[in-house]
Length: 309
Figure: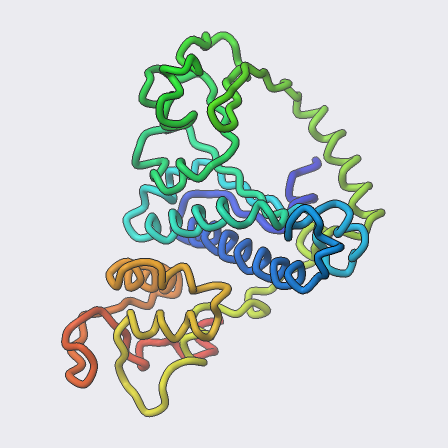
């Protein structure tokens, strides 16, 4: 049977902490990719970007080695991230940054939820989204959480859609919207579409290692543990989390800079959440020469390299 995994570059399914951490990793990678593209675009002469410094089809075709084609990050049931006690702050910060800055460079973030309440859609995220689709909902609050403040009063009302009108919704961009209906695709039709897409991508040479069936070994990927070992100050046994976050951001800004945009408590929580899959916990530490008591790590708590693999 044909599956989406034959086409996707990377993907996970589930709502365990390790799955949510993988979703965060996908957004971090998206930020790193738009930064790479932005650096390349900024180095071009104005004559090549007359309409602004952004990725265009013309640039993607002119510089194929830069791989400027669209990259899409899809997170379904995103409320699992945005309501998670440890992950929600970083998830909101990453999503907001991607939405605001990624689109100009061809990085598209698609978020889906069946629970459109305020906690499931943080205001920093919902206020940044440009294109919104709302299927049938029960009340004006859910309607406005998806379509934007005041949408119900402006006549954009997904509450008027019957539950029998499956696939029908309000598609809004800015203050305007229209009623649309998605096509229902049967599983057999989806397989045919997928097979054709696979053939086209194979011919174009745009499949990633995972999509072509290559085994992506965990040890091929650097983790936060590797980065902590790289930045840990020599001869120091304990370091507060917020200091580690500052060092991580200086070492790998593409991955950790969003953490520095949080307050100290949020940054500490983000580090703790990133370490959880490796069974490493932060603890309250008193370091007199630094800033008294705060959450932090002891170097001896980092597992040896062979244990982490």
